[in-house]
Length: 72
Image (cartoon, rainbow, N blue to C red; front, side):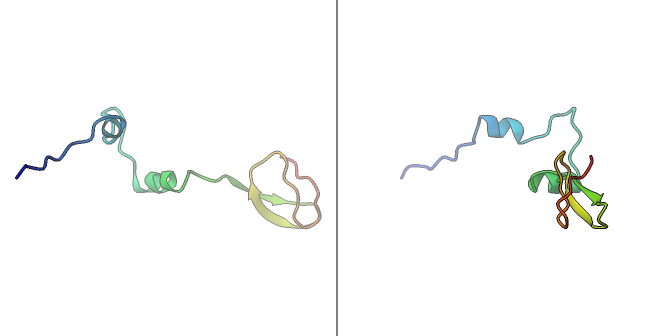
């Protein structure tokens, strides 16, 4: 019988598997944000028509009620 050898992976995966000594370890909140794709910036807008709504931060936000452009 021949012995089966297990191989350790080398390459980019091995290099990035451990944090660098000069970087602090990520906390639970940071790991959760990274795994979800990062933070999503939203803002609360108040339109002149009286509608208050949340939308992604953008230079071209329109009120969902009346369609008026919102100042940023």
